[in-house]
Image (cartoon, rainbow, N blue to C red; front, side, top):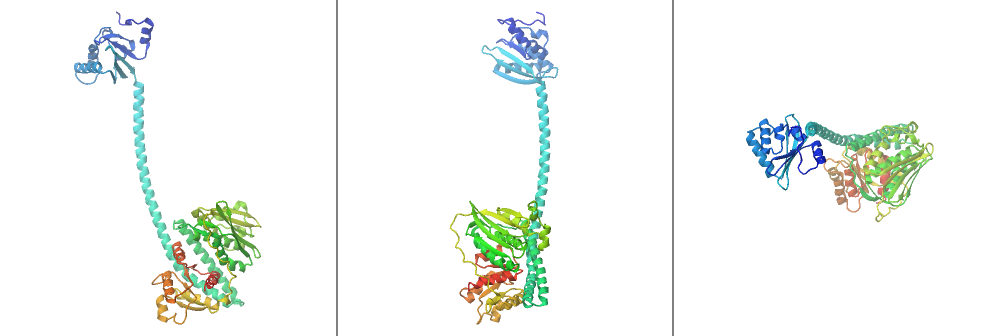
Length: 536
């Protein structure tokens, strides 16, 4: 039969035979004795077989030996390779191998034994797929190397960032520690200066020197406000601000703030009122007080004489809204965000009152730390309303405190026994001069040892004690406990300190001791004495 002639397919019709020869796959059929029955042109061309090995009846071992001798079956003895391949295809139901043909194309060869032990061999040219797989493998390898390089770079970058963060944290910690120490040392002499100028002003009231004393006091007050504000911002930005949430009656807090700011409002002939009902909220009492103090201070500062400032709280669903309203100069709605920026002051406000524009910056920081909401409504020339929304707590309301009685005039302190303890003699002298000018009977000491050595408590019992926190040999709170044991009975006390950290205030509150921060404002001291003298 000519080599180009298609071998006949036994018992197959011509149409099926033609279709088999047109398939893009090489196909060959071997009988149970593994002799060639038929093969198509793709099979012969793909394997590069000579015409003699494509004749029906050709044993499979002849074909395998030819391929082995040509090297298609790999390195080794051709006969051994051919025998191994024959045993494999005759013993396994199916096999799948891949190898290159003489043209360098990749062939994927599949063998399958039929039920009558006939053998079907087929193969397809997978050169394109093999090249794609090789390219993909190369891409994956390259990508893996790139990922590894990027991972190493990110690891190094993260290590550098961690070092930088640790260094920044250490610097912030050192800065906070320095500021805490420096603030105490700086505020101590400032406190004495404030007390001296207050005494000077009261003693020169009605004389030409009174205006000079008032100007000195105003300058010292500005210095105090700047220092305290900058220290607060530094603590907040360094992460030293700690939030301690408790449940408390916000209206009680408002009444205390009313007592604190009533003298300042009276000086400007401003009507300051607190309205509302008892509402239990969950917040940090000290930080919330600072927010309200700043808002009330601003309201009084930017309200003209004969104006009004209203502070109130009311329920709003599951929240309590605290409002600070004034009839002041107002703020244009386009400038609402500007007023919260550090050192930012509006032109009209700067003409009315001095300041650096830091109060509302602190308010915004504290509100963010408390996770409360701050709102503002304002109309130029009509006034402003600042609102704070905080969560309401459904629990038994705190027992309402009696309304504050009218503030006592200085003459009402006549004969009031006051013991002042501070490790700075200049502060004691200034405090003594101010309190004696109000009619108080004052005794001072720098330590508990001095009290004992001078026998200050022999025949003289203090009505109240103003105690510094940082004493040379002990803390002010421990000193107060000692005094209470010596004096016996009920002894009203207050902590007067330049240490404005929340920890000190919390320790004092835990012992039922109010705190007055240095530098001491005479109005705040007078309000404290008024409140404490009611306990006598």
